[in-house]
Amino acid sequence: MTDTTGTETGGDTGDDWAAAMNEQSEAEATTTEESTGGGDADWGAAMEEQATQEAAAGVEQAPMQNLEAEEGGICMGDASLDVILDIPVNISMEIGASKISIRNLLKLNQGSVVELDRLAGEPLDVLVNGTLIAHGEVVVVNEKYGIRLTDVISAAERIQKLK
Image (cartoon, rainbow, N blue to C red):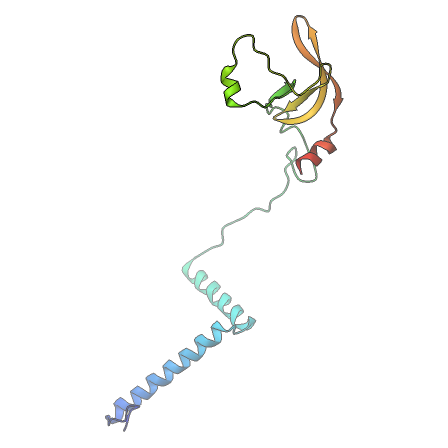
């Protein structure tokens, strides 16, 4: 018998060689079919085979609970503000601002006057965490400064400014 290189081989050895070559070509054909998308039937068969192997190995699926909104909790449909009411925020009042160079900043000393960009009597800005929420005027109550709100910016306007 002659093998693929043309050399003479023994009787049984040639049959074994031919059987091995046939087996390899069948394996290559199967691999090519799987990599080119053998279809849903192959996928389903593979999933069934995996399930069978897992069952034989004693593998079980972990128990899972369905997620549901709890009573009193927040879900998308129920916008409860109770969760955020105790969060602290910084509120500040801005009289005005000015831009100066570092040279002029270093020249400041006691008694220096810094000109601001606001006119006298113009409303102050009320900022919460740096976001403008209202305008107001300065008042003195029991020897302490305060601010009387004269114009509160609506929530819709504040949200619009965030965008």
